[in-house]
Length: 164
Image (tube, rainbow, N blue to C red; front, side, top):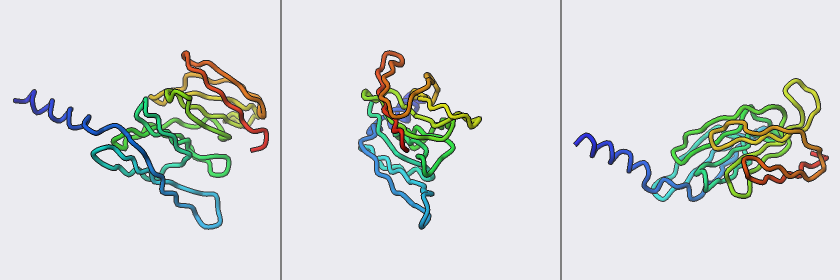
C-alpha cells in the first residue's frame, strides 16, 4: 500500500508537468530602469507564479526550464535563474555586469556575455552554464565581433554589440 501511495505522489508530479508556455508581468519603478518580473509558467494541469525575477526570459523545452537572464545593461540583477515547472528556481551568480544573454539553438545550454570581471577590469567574456546552473565554459570575446564556440559538443554563436 505504501509503495502505491509513493507511486501515486510521484506520478501526480509528472502528469501535465511539461512547461507549455510562460508569460511575464513586468513592474518598473516610474521613470527608472529598475524592473522586476513575475513569471507565469503554464503546464497542462496548472499555472505557477514566480515573483521577484529579472528577465529576459527564454523557454528551454529540452530542459523543461525557463531561463531568466537576471537583468540587462540597464537593470542589473545579482543572479540569473533557471525555473522548473513547479516554480522552483536555481540561481547562477553573475560574474560581472551583463551585456547580453541567450540560450543555445538546441535549448540545452544558457550563455551570458559580461562586460568585465568582478574586479572591475575590462575583459568581455562569455560564460556558459548547464541546466543545473553550473559554469561549464568561460572565455574572452571581442565586442562587435561574431564568435562561435563549441561547448560539450553544442555550438553557441554570440555577436555582442560593441555599443551596449
